[in-house]
Amino acid sequence: ETGVTQSPTHLIKTRGQQVTLRCSSQSGHNTVSWYQQALGQGPQFIFQYYREEKNGRGNFPPRFSGLQFPNYSSELNVNALELDDSALYLCASSLDPESGANVLTFGAGSRLTVL
Amino acid sequence: AQKITQTQPGMFVQEKEAVTLDCTYDTSDPSYGLFWYKQPSSGEMIFLIYQGSYDQQNATEGRYSLNFQKARKSANLVISASQLGDSAMYFCAMREPYDITGGGNKLTFGTGTQLKVEL
Image (tube, rainbow over all chains, first blue to last red; front, side, top):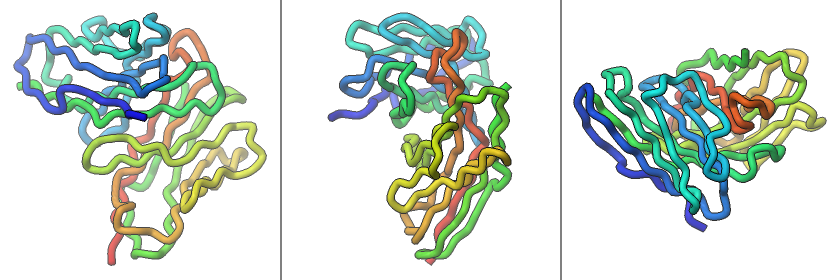
C-alpha cells in the first residue's frame, strides 16, 4: 500500500504571496490532518478533515485554509504569507477519527521558506 | 490544556546499548493516548509505539517499549540494543479525546529529543 505523499517537497515564497500544499492520503484512510513544524519545535495541529468536512481546528489564523476531495486527498492553502510561516508542513492520514488506537501516518512534509 | 514535556534536548548512546527517552504529560482527561514518533533528517514522522491510558500493560514493539507510569504522568520510551539507524529526533505526543476542536486526531507534541547513536 502506498503511504502519504506530499508535494511540493520544497518551495520558496515571498511575503504576501499565497501557497497551496498538496497531500495524498494512504490508501483506505478517510481522515487528513495538517501540522506545522517550525525549526527546532514539535509539530502543531492546524486542522483536520474527515470525509470532506473540517472537524477540528487548531490555533491558526483564517489565512490557513484547507480542502479535502472525494478521494480523500487534501490541500492546505496559506494566504498573505508571513516570515513566521516558514516551516515544515506535515500531512497525516488515518482511519475514522473516533477509533481507539488510531495511528496517524505522516508524509515527509513540504518545507516552505518565506523570504 | 494538554501538555507534553521532553526535558532532554539531546542524548548520546553507544551502539548496542539501551537508552531511555523521557516524556511527561499533563491532562485532566481520564481517557487519552500516548504516542512516540521518530523523525529522521528526511522529515517524515515514523510511528513507533502507542499506549492507551486504560491499558494495563506497558506497550512493546520490537526493540521499543514504553515505560508507562500513570500516577507520575510519565511515558518514557526505551530503545534496546541501539543501532546507528536509530539516530534521529524522537517526539512524544498525546492525543486528546474526541472533541469539536480537535476532531479526535489532534496530537499535542513535545519539543523532541535528538538521539545520536555512536560506535
